[in-house]
Each structure stands twice: as C-alpha cells, then as structure tokens.
Length: 212
Image (cartoon, one colour):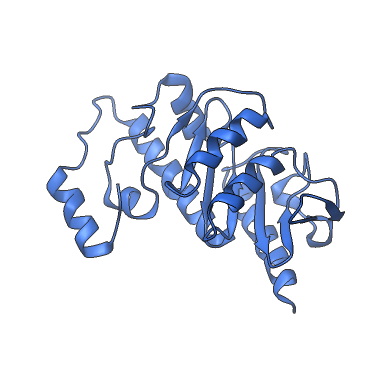
C-alpha cells in the first residue's frame, strides 16, 4: 500500500471513530492531510462516519482540485495552516458539542478559550485562541489562522468549533479529543476550578517540554 493510500485509510478510520463517539454529527467537520505533492481533504458536506477513501479530494500545492469529490469549503483555512507551519501533517475541524457550547456560554479569554486545568491539556493541546464568528469558509478566518499557525496547535471558531493541527491525522484527533474532554470538565463544574499554578506549569515544561 502506498503512503497516500495509508493516509486515505487513516482519514477514514479517524472520521468513523469521531462520528461513532459523537464528536461529529451529520455532515459536519472535515479532515485534511499533507502529501509530498499536495493535500488530501474530505469532500464538502461529506459524513465523516461514512467516508470512501477513493472519494477523498486530492488538491495540488497550488490549490488545484485534482481528483476525488469536491473539496471541503474550508480548504483555504487548511492551506493557511500548512503554508505557515512546515511541521503540520494534518488538520482536523469538528463541531464538538462541549466546545461549541463553550463559545455560546463565554470562553475564558481571547488568547485561550480555557485555563490550564489539567496536565494533559497543557501537554497535548496548549493554548487555543478564540476567533470571533464568521460564516463557514470565510477567507478572513483563514487570514487570522495564518498568523497563529506556527504558535499554537489549534483555534476555536465561535459557534462552529475547533480547528486542530498536528503531525498526523491520528495525533490531531487525539489533541481534539483531549480539548473536548477538557471543555466537558469545565462545563460540568458549577464552581470553576483554579488554573494550574505557575510552578506546576514550569514543572510540565521542564519534565515534558510542554508549552503554555
């Protein structure tokens, strides 16, 4: 199996896993991955739980649609992440319930939607900046993401959900899941927990290389 075929399979397996566990519903969300000669991205309005490897769109480095079904309307946003962070191998966007609810209720701060309340949130996700609402696929969102792509592992789109990037599709999914669970914990607590202390954050940075 070629490297591209393996990535196509990984996209399908990740999409099915997220769909089965309720991280995405209907035809919401999209996944992309970097190739040597361009990108793969899930088709527009495709259900992530029922993806066909052959139907995943292939796009050239210049943005030309080469094969598969029509690319997701968020292609420009994904491309800005890849163009501004050479270490990114995959980008994942969902409408995860707890995270979207967080944007409706009010996030913690503009530069980070949640305070650092668990060590794995700090280690696996880090700060996730908040981006004010724009329509799905809006170019101004892609411009804002471009400026953040090499500084953080993701952003939160108001009323739309998280966009997370990592070195592989699977790792992007793991980061997304950790972020969603942190938002769920935050929403479950009537008296909001204090953030980890500066000493605790420094220890995580020293021992694990975590950045906050």
